[in-house]
Length: 136
Image (tube, rainbow, N blue to C red; front, side, top):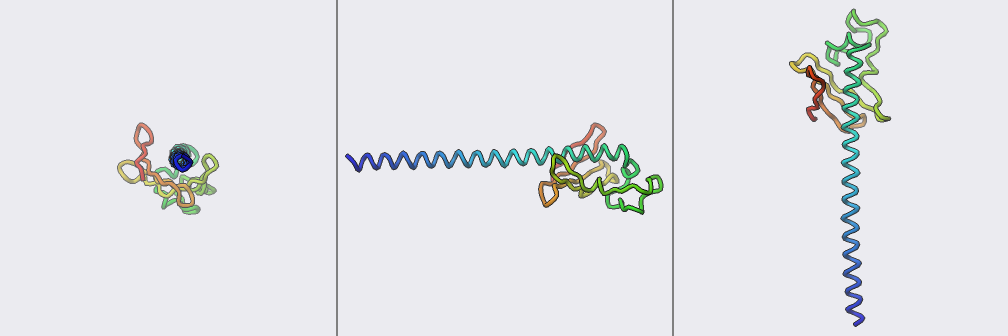
C-alpha cells in the first residue's frame, strides 16, 4: 500500500509542478506583450510630439528630410539659433526615442522612430486625417 501511496503523491507533485510552470510561462508572455504594447504606445506618442513640433517652433524644417537638418546650414526662414537635435532625440514616458528618418518628399510623408539602444522601431505615415502606423 505504501508504494502505491508514494506513486500517487509523486504523480500529484509532478502534475502541480507542470501546471505551475505553465502558469509562470503564461505570465511571462503576458509581461512581454505588455512591454511591447507600451513601447508601441511610446513610439506613437513620440510621432505625435514630433509632428506637433514640426507644426510649431520647428515648422521651417517640416518640408526638409531629416538628413538635411544640419545646424548652421538650415534654410534662411529658420532662426539662426534653431537646433534640430531635440527632434532627433526625445524622451517619452522616461524612455529615450530617436528619430531615424523624416521624409516629406515622398507622396505620403513618413517618419521612422526607434527606441534608443536598438529597441522597437516603427514607421508612420502622415495623412490628412493624422498619423498611421505602417509597422517596421
